[in-house]
Image (tube, rainbow, N blue to C red; front, side, top):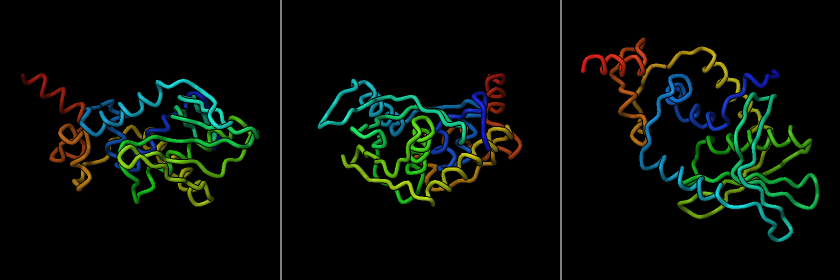
Length: 207
């Protein structure tokens, strides 16, 4: 499915979706956000990366904060770093993350979406990129194979369906909830048909 400019959603929302559909809806439908230690560390890491200037290192051009767009997936965003070699087809996206490499595919799918956007924009084929994790200070190479690309397309479609529905999924507690910056706002005890934003408005009216 081809999307238009008006349909574009943030590439970063893919990770929110894959981590927790309710979290994704709270952030991108209800516009609710709360920072915690983990999100603050991630923001600071990205600010450090983004504040650097483009340069040439070992014969490769290093571009930072590169705008991305893909109408095929209906996504837009910013690539932390993209390395360009002397050959036009040598394009290597790098995404910075605060923590460690995960077994789940959230980070790899986000990076793959960036690569697919670059392919569409530049008319090239990109076979791999890398994730740089702040805790381990290491790059993890990611191969953009057919399986990962299919998972990325599926996640993009699910994201568009969720946002188009305008509905926030019901809360279900999981161990990963403890690391979520929205834990207190999410409030698992809320009725399934009651949105967090409406709950907060009701609380404000009661004060």
